[in-house]
Length: 267
Ligand SMILES: C[S@@+](CC[C@H](N)C(=O)[O-])C[C@H]1O[C@@H](n2cnc3c(N)ncnc32)[C@H](O)[C@@H]1O
Image (cartoon, rainbow, N blue to C red; front, side):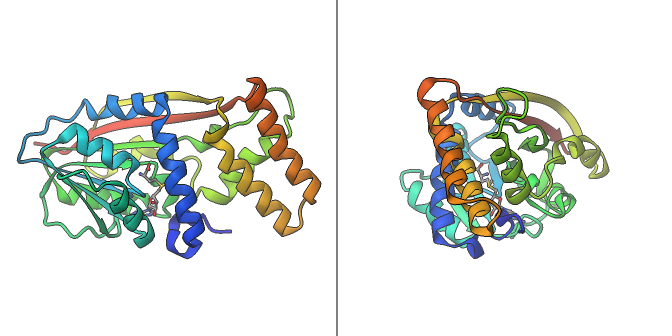
């Protein structure tokens, strides 16, 4: 199966609603809030600034950017019409925020029009990340910032002991819902090729111990394995029940790594 985040509208309204809620929940996690707050601290915006998020989804991060940058203008560009509609519904009280349907490789912006471009968990889902970075370079003003934050999906785990059977759900999620699990390792070489220079790079661990945050991984992967006929109903239900059991008794341990990079266009 192709990563559904390459064409969310084709994945259908149920997928759009599920992931709009799931991304809101992920962003409400204090670890994710710290990661986003830390990279937004690199921005020096004025009333006249324009900041864009490319691949804004339903706007979970774009709303944080709009609060942090107010009253500067913030625009969320997103490939999926369904997500743009969700994003608009969820951002009614933000006066400095708009969402537009657009491909991050062909933004409806003049050259050197914006102060910062943010890509949050997008590049792991695209076939040609260089094209989005080249487009960001085109639209950035001199001295403008490109901020990229992505999960290193090659390290994502549900492993509490050797051969933990729940880890099959993490592996399956990465196989079915991610285009390039190793993109984080390529961020710095990519940025040098694009003519930008790295000002900051770090990685943060995220441990998920609460039921709601990674449950979609388990629900969706077991449903798909069952529908493909790879596993029976009992095992699918058993994996979901095991996730719930660990969440209940406090032993759930989902592990992810997020990398943040801040790069600048020459002044
Ligand atoms: C995992 S979601 C992240 C959404 C949002 N940044 C967040 O963290 O809540 C990845 C998003 O990238 C979008 N996307 C994928 N390819 C894109 C492209 N070429 N241009 C614009 N958006 C794209 C998908 O539609 C999806 O909404």
